Length: 125
Image (tube, rainbow, N blue to C red; front, side, top):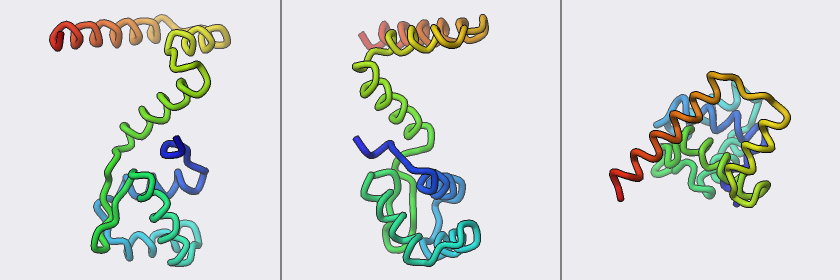
């Protein structure tokens, strides 16, 4: 899924939108000229690319967010785990913790996430 893979400039552009949305597309193009030295057409091409991926929308010249930065980062993490660890979070954590020792605080945060997940499952079940 290419939706969650962004190159460096795509990421900087997306960050600009997340920080300023909703924003008029013309104003966004001017900001890109100032920040990146882009021509108007470059900004619109990049915007179309990210709109096609359903991250943003450009309707009647107003750019809005379809996927928040947090949602995007979650989807990117999920995509990474799916592509590299067959969708297994335990395999990812095992590989990660072999190279970097988890601190006590990190272990506690993970336990808390698991506990919260289990509580939500019980409420829904």
